[in-house]
Image (cartoon, rainbow, N blue to C red; front, side, top):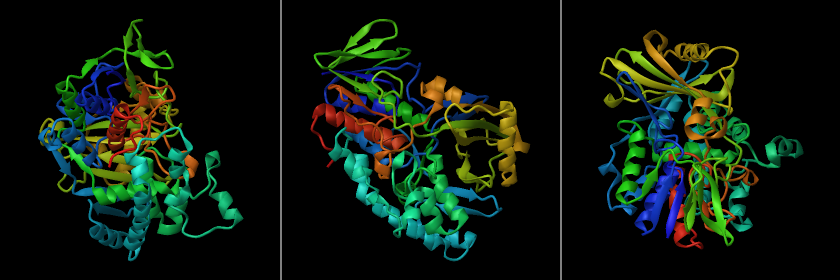
Length: 483
């Protein structure tokens, strides 16, 4: 079969590589001039910065992709590094805690030492309940394609994944009814009730916030995001995450996938009740037996996401002076005026991203509503406000600043085509299905959706999973997921 993939993002390329190995003729049309979607790099004066995701979870998704498309390990193409520290949290009251990566016992001890006896056990108890939610929903959420049918959505829509610890009266039930009419506790509620420490609550809510989810609206099942991070660890790709996108692009090319850049798709063609190709911006058409839409909302064939998520303000910081010894890769700066909505600072120890060892590259990110500007001030004043917060946290970035570059939601919109610079959040079970993304098979036969704007949502692991799901469905429309 001839397959046209719309968009050369990570989900689209994951689908393209798998379909090409299955013997299909695959052609990718990408509106931008390069591959990778939001996984980009900015370089200047010897500094390099990830402008999209800076860390990787569940690398097994890409390990499986490379093995299945070429009997080759991912590590033969990229250098994966498991960071020793998941994150350092600096709280508004001046306390801080550094969490070891993928070591529950050490995390418990660190929390007790920093926040007081019992803090670690409360955090571990929450993660144990999150594990139950993970085990109950992992397969239908991450291994099986989502279909537009009640049986497919029903199992994920119920709040059984992470129910409230105790039954509530009528007033409590009314308080837990979130936007859209979905009943069940919100993440902020279970953080308050179960963790009983505003700093622990800020840690849990901050995990969802970093994924572009409002903890006051996200269902309690968002606790699985913290569980995945704690259990499976956090990884970095040496040279930056763009190296992973480059490796996937090269894998596609090796499997004879054809790419056309600066080639915007404006419509999906239909014939005899099914997708039959695409229309391009130059007025030409491309015939196909199958169309895979890997692009975002508003793109032809795009399903539009679930209407949730955040955009990003990102500040790329070129710093004078060597990276201080013991600096964690990731620091979350919690804000008194916005509990559970921290700033994220990434400081990779990677010589490939700095001109020499007497300089440091860092990336400061704040999720914001899509389309947000810098407020009443200039971009420079906005950066100054953010740096003031990091200085108050004792990070001392302002005095070392050589230069900076600002990436606004408008910049991301221009780069990715996503309205307002919106970044798709991961799909979540519960909440009546309000946090699920559109199904992988579209209602038009022969049209499928991959990437962050379709099931199972945003993030590098989910993008790779969506590609596997679509490839399975193209091979067999009745395919129900991996074994």
